[in-house]
Length: 343
Length: 99
Image (cartoon, rainbow over all chains, first blue to last red; front, side, top):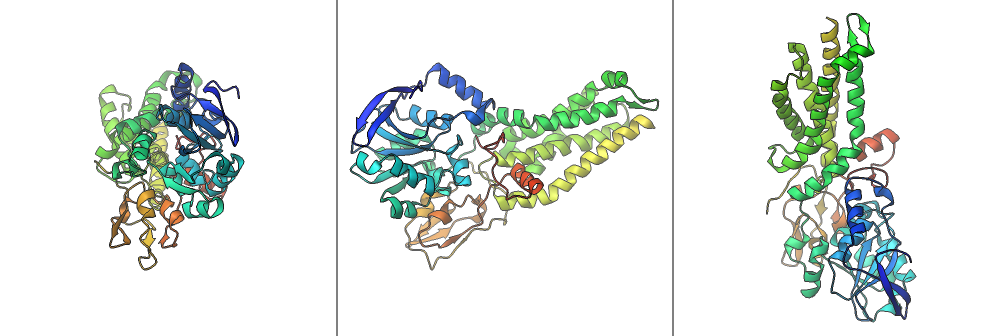
């Protein structure tokens, strides 16, 4: 075990167990920043298996988590001073909630890891503390039947683990609720911004071609000279969907994300009026008043996957209505822009 | 605390109260406080709070809860429609959703 967070080894009846630090070092913070920016986030994982925190013994609690390093770091940074075992499941480097949804943080993997780590030899009790959000992948009663271990669902957030154990495994309703506050939403923006960039490049490419079209035909020279305002508009549409909508989420007074995106897009389009990027003709202005809200709506709709409260049934319903509208807005806008240049 | 609520009357969650044995597991696993307990029987406080994560149904030892669980993610639905597969959270690829 060469991992930097391992500070020693605990020799137990179940074999040698690596002891991990509960204070993050600068490298870990760089890793957190990188993961939040979406840089090599897929391979940000640690070796699954059993770890020790502090000096645990046969009476110590066993906490279960995933092998996404960001998750692992959050857990260990929040349990400094406790003496506990940490059982890390192989979720393929995915956080607990998403992995539970896929079933990789699941009954099967948990039972397998209990056996691989010989937990029955490690401790005298038969309790495991799981993060509450693991529950959509784990059936507690089946784990009990197959392994003899009782699953206790702990709090949603690692910062409440200490209080949960202190309160004899009781979580109050605040510990059990998933939040989606301003900071939670803002944290997601960089990754979403980077991973959705293909929409910007796609739309920008189309408008670059459009910018080169005139009554004399197509010219790259012409495109380069007149593309800048379109690029600003496309970027504004993207930001309306992926920055403004997440930030203003609870304050945009409609429920569907597609509608939230349309309103944010409209607001930004109005905001662009004084900057003369919408073009000099009525047709061009109308075109951008369709395109910007349309793209913003599509991008905002994709934020449903990042949110913590949208249901599959609801997303299906809003997409059925919104997708055709978004496509129509974008299509009509593009035709108007071309027509404006030709006639 | 402020609560974000999604669309009305779309969720597939149902609870058969006659099967319920009052173990309270659904109250523990639900991330949105959808369930309450009254006289050793669970009940649904407000269905519109539900995000169909499926944790309650999976952890109900009495099979008293039914919900069509899945990811409420437009990108996953588009991906699923394009590839002809079940919509799944694409967190293992570069999908932003699942941080």
